[in-house]
Image (cartoon, rainbow, N blue to C red):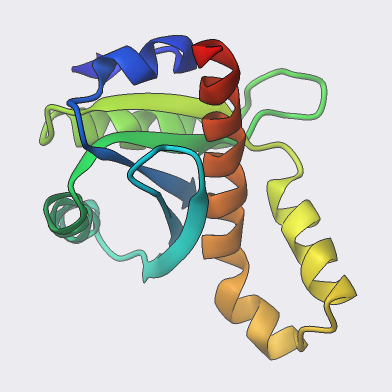
Length: 156
């Protein structure tokens, strides 16, 4: 498949498949799942990153287990809209995945996703320890929900 624009993602999915959202960090990968109707994103899990091969195998297991037809990966664009080293790292991770999986991948601007999730958790009086445990998968859900909302608008 390859990298597709978000506008092309819906048409690239096999019928009945779901989307998996990824928030790639240096130490972890936050994961979120879309429901079967591609309307709601839910936090799923956090993978502690090791070597790419192990990370990819864990993603393969999740893709097979949950009927995933495509990936939405958060792209850490700078506040001025430019792309720095973090974006290059995310794009390379996606390129490496595409060498192993035949699956469409779309990028979604993740500016302020972690900040927004952290703020919401603080407002909900979630402890610092608990926030550290859930922020990555919550950020992945925030990213995936943004992409799902865009897809919903495109379907109208």
